[in-house]
Amino acid sequence: MVDGHELMWWTWRTGVRHCPDCDHLRVMLMSASRTGAVVHVPHGLRDNGPDVPITPRFVAAAARQALLAGWRPGESTGAFHLPGPERQDGP
Image (cartoon, rainbow, N blue to C red; front, side, top):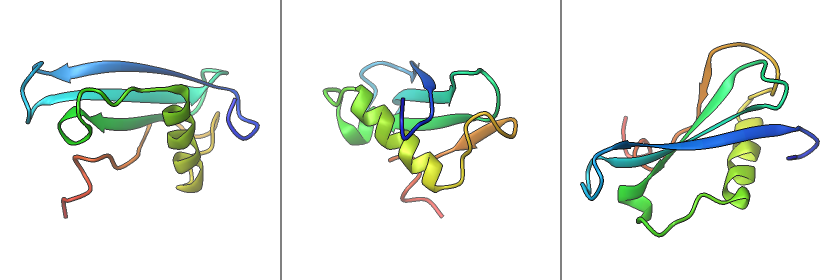
């Protein structure tokens, strides 16, 4: 539950383990109703280090960031992408 929104979340890993440029965790959020746009929250291990855990506090902060950026749980369709560490330096 984040700011009155019932949410669910999960993580998965992409890339190659122990590869400093290609090892990433991904976090996905969505309304617990399983409707509406899904939020993709990249969490780059390269930038945060392998010991930075994905915790409920991390997920709640990402959900709040998505809400501030215009995400509305249970509404719209498709993916809502939040910038992550690996995207912040790009154009």
